[in-house]
Image 1 (cartoon, rainbow over the protein chains, first blue to last red):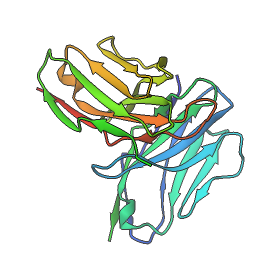
Image 2: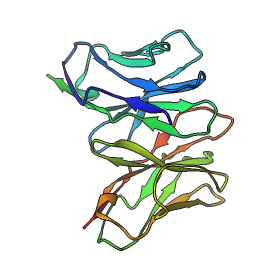
Image 3: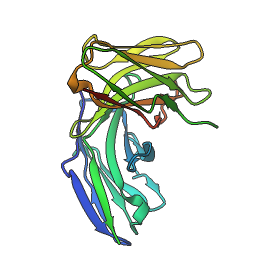
Length: 115
Length: 114
């Protein structure tokens, strides 16, 4: 089975600064999708950004961008110009392109934004 | 468009009881997945339903079951509750195949087992 590892249980960043959250995954598949989800306190989980494995170009969504290293099986999330509203639990997730809709999630990184 | 709706939001049960959780997906979404979220464990996949059929099942005991109705609404049931079943149960919907899009999550049902 695929595994997703987030080695940083907690991170903090000063408001307006940049922070990078790490994620590694293990798979023998070549075609898959990677996601970062954000879960604010007591609120529902929402998608931050997604990356298709067949695309070499790193995905970006406004202040959020990823560094996708397929050979290293690494998928980090960079948040630029951090805002107080970015404080949340961030989950990295993997989904196979072949085996249906099952997502594999990491254990999450709790991000604190310091004013 | 209404989001994913889960009921009840909070519930307290005692060991040995059973519980049923409900999930209404986003209109037009035919795939519904269930996840168990606990501190330190992240999200663990329970099962996925598409067109009333279970397509995938995670590594949970048979006490955990689910079903999907013709209107895509889904229920999950946990029988003979154990203390370790205390968790946030998340439902997520998506369009389903051949779409390879994201999951849309509900706010979850927080189950406490005493």
